[in-house]
Amino acid sequence: MKLVNKHIVVAVSGGIAAYKSAEFVRALQRQGAQVRIAMTDSATQFVTPLTFQALSGHPVHLQDTGSLDEAGMDHIALARWSDAIIVAPATANIIAKLSHGIADNFVTSLCLAHQGKLAVAPAMNQAMWNNPVTQKNVAQLQTHGVSVFGPDTGIQACGETGEGRMLEPEQLVDQCITLFANTLFENKHVVITAGPTIEPIDPVRFISNRSSGKMGYALADAAIEAGANVTVISGPTHLSRNDRVKYIDVETAEQMYLATVEFCSQADVFIAAAAVADYTPANYAHQKIKKNNAELSISLTRTTDIVKEIKHTYPSLFCVGFAAETEQVIEHAKQKLIKKSLDMVIANQVGLANQGFDSDFNAVEIITQQDMKSLSRARKTQLARMIIKEIAQQLNQQNHQSNVSYL
Image 1: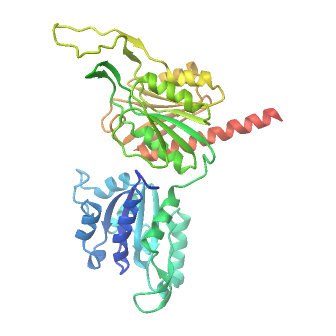
Image 2: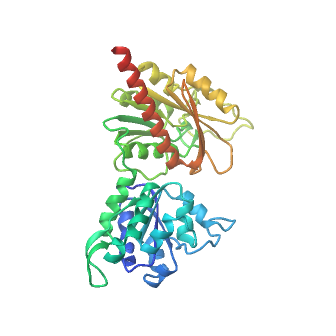
């Protein structure tokens, strides 16, 4: 499933090809995508919203109702939720509106507010498609980074034959997959740790933390998109998994360390995104500890600092650490970068509402020995792509410097 964990909005406009969009939704879901639907009023004359609600499992967005956003700005909330918006079918009318920044309905407002990937799947009469005005509008969209899927050539609803048919659903899915593909990490092996570790006290109790693993899993998906071979060493999570990623399940910090040492031996990049327990109980009770005393003291010992040990064991490996801090975020992250001889540290402040632990959103600082870059609050899937891009750029710089030194 090549679209696993991707959030895709199918925006349906008023063309006869709207019936194909129903199968398009199903085809996206078969590839693992999470799909939401937005429709123009005219689109509802061709296919009812109830059809798309039944297919997607979610209410169809026709206007701002406050179902997603308390302020009644659902188009903003849905734009932030989505990794990509595909307008299918895209009529000549909606292409003209999008090319000129007109936002006079939910769909056009949604597209204008979206900062991710946007694509249109044209569907119209061949004369309308070949009209110079339409061609100018399409070209204008492309200059703004909008992808154009199709159109196809064939018999049209009006009985004419020519270019203007919307691509078939499976063809559209193939095009969607290409939206996320790149070659930044082609032929690279990336090892990522993700999620929490759990340190057992007795058979029913353990020490852990609030990490959900979402950032590590998002980085794995982004690395796959970039052409990498990816291994994720994962603590316990409840997240959906990418079938193109190799997952190694562990529980304790020691298990995570041993697995990481093994798989990093052939890696090009190591990203330590897991929230590894810093301490583990010194003594494991083989039977459940009873509540016999008013107080209970548990002796703890330090666990292995995985990212520090990996960098020491494999000094040429590009190592990325994470710093989740409650205060002095930049200062603590820079100290970690230096003390552990890392190539990069991703720092973020925890304890804030609706970002960081257990959230789909975060804001981070990317810190290297030479530079620092701020990434403002965004979905972790979007942040992951930006982080992967930064890592690729740093790798290229290091390789270039090495080649220059060798020469």
